[in-house]
Amino acid sequence: MVEDVCEIVVTGSDAEWLGGYTRTLVEERLVACGHQFAAIRSVYRWEGAVHDEAEARVALHTRRSLVPEVVARTAELHPYDVPCVIALPLVGGAPDYLSWVVRETREPQGGEGGGRA
Image 1 (cartoon, one colour):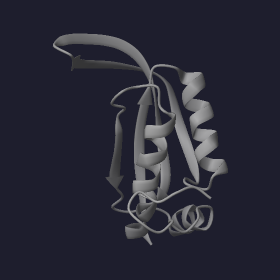
Image 2 (cartoon, rainbow, N blue to C red):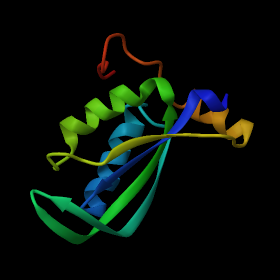
Image 3 (spheres, helix red, strand yellow):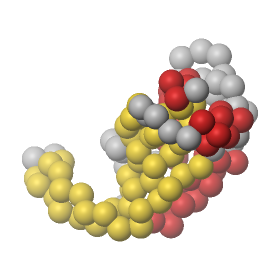
């Protein structure tokens, strides 16, 4: 079951927006849940300048097969031009939790990037 599940990390400048975004993905059954960190510090280079800013971060748990749809949906919803959206493999976990993640998410839609239910 662990090979069927992954964690997707997404960051954003607004914790409230990120909470609403997470709720949307859960309601659409693209993810089973999201664990949000309300305050992180991001240091990055953008358009030739180094930025040091407060952001929020969410760890989303979903099926690996839904990653393309989560990426596509994030591109539609996220206010950033280039949002951080990365999928991380899981190497283990509680079997009951991993089964729950699969049960609480839907089957992927057909085609590259998929669609929404």
